[in-house]
Length: 43
Image (cartoon, rainbow, N blue to C red; front, side, top):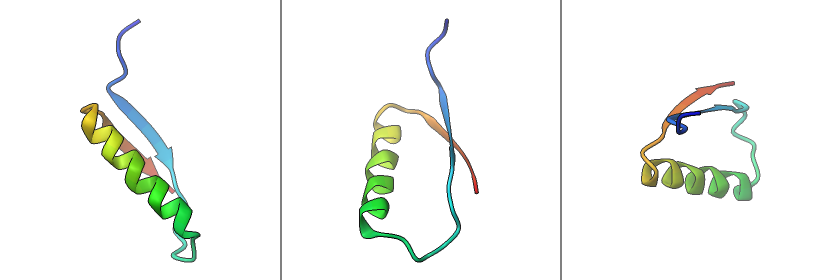
């Protein structure tokens, strides 16, 4: 099996979110960049 190159995330479109979720998204984005992973998203 090869290494992971992409990750798919489904997100909601509401701007009424808890600040903790926003911070988690920022941290996940930084982790993806650090690992040179591609993000595929929908929602």
